[in-house]
Structure formats: C-alpha cells, structure tokens
Image (cartoon, rainbow, N blue to C red; front, side):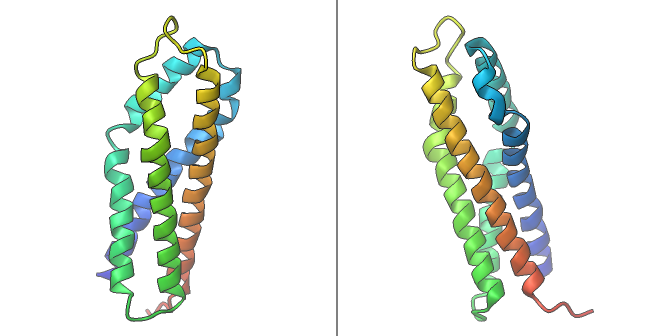
Length: 156
C-alpha cells in the first residue's frame, strides 16, 4: 500500500512542480519585456489552461503526503522527517498560490488592454516574485520527497 501511495503522490508532485517550473523557466523570467496586451493575453491563457487541473493535483499531492506521514508516523526516521518537510513545503506553495497568485489571477482575468490598471507592472512583478518563490519551494519539496523514498531500505 505504501508504494502505491508513494507512486501516486510522487506523480502528483511532479505534475505540480512541473507546471510551476515550466511556467517560470520558459515564460516568467521574460515577462517584463511583454506589453500590457501581451501579458494579459498570455496570462489569461495560462489561467485557463491550469484552472481545471491544479485545484485537483495540488491538494491531491498534499493529501498523499499527509497519508504517507500518517503511515510512517511510528518510525521517526529520515523517511518520516523528509515526508514532513515535503508536506510543509507543498503546503507553503499552496498558501502562496491561494493567498497571492490566485487573487492576482482573478484581477488579471478582468483586464483588457484598454482597462489595465496603471500599476499593472508592479502587480506583474509581485506575481513573478511569488511565482519564483513558489516554484523553488515546490522543487525543494520534490527533493525532500525523493530523499524520503531513497532513504528507505529497498528489499527485493
């Protein structure tokens, strides 16, 4: 049972971290070069593309980590503490998402090139800063998860 939960949780975590990493690596680092119209168009497309899956896979990864933590609670070993670290990091990524990123996304969904607020560039910078932070927090969570799985003695 543990191996199945690890596999599903690991896959969900890879998907979450992959969405964050891909957006940051391929797009976010150059957003300051975009016009308001281009930023709005791309932003709306990204929001539309991720809005169906992320509310499922992100909580799913956290639930999987919580299950693994409960399953490993009797042994306070490297595995347990690495899973705990991964869980804390993924919860931090979720808090950034729900508390900062989604409210900005909800503003952006209502913008047009004609109605963009005067401070749109500072809003974009805030989004990018927290997106980068969330990206690296999720990658650290993946690292903790991998360390947990690798810390177990594998018996064949």
